[in-house]
Amino acid sequence: MFIGRKDYLDDLESLWRKRTSSIVACRGRRRIGKSTLFREFAKRAADVYMEFEGLAPNPKHPVTNEDQLAEFAATLARLTASPVLSLPNWKDAFFWLDRAIDDSKKTVVLLDEISWMGGCDPNFPAVLRNAWETWFHRHERLIVVVCGSVSAWIKRNILGNTGFAGRFSRDARRWSRGARTGSPPFRPFRTGTP
Image 1: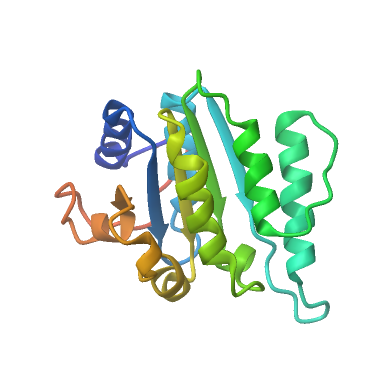
Image 2: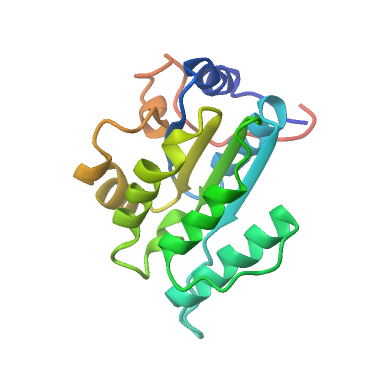
């Protein structure tokens, strides 16, 4: 059972009424329910939910961009019941993700812990921006969520990137200040029985 966040869920649901694709940022400290919010939103309001999570840093075995791409490819294969692709770069990864999106279905794509996912490739923000402009924004029933706990990375590389200027439908960090919905701050919340 999911408890709370009605204002946030209602605000996200309003994005479907736009009849255009949306890109949403959600950032904040770990373990406060950012990903859970989007899973619940997708469960309630989407036909398809695709979640990709960056691999956490590992001091004993540093995670490479190739590791991140392999994880993305494995997740894409699992979600689409397709063979695992060899993805040499993020452009190819986003190309194949785009091909997996069915325009007849409301789809939420969560790129979770995006700073881990894209942190090994300095070109990641530019490639994501190009994928948005070239492919993703053409899907009228698509919401792409960039989410993570390294707020500074998201602000610097995604939200502060001039290539993304004016493209974000929502920044959940602004929700936390009540600027978007008048909701209380984005604080930890519970799932389960009250």
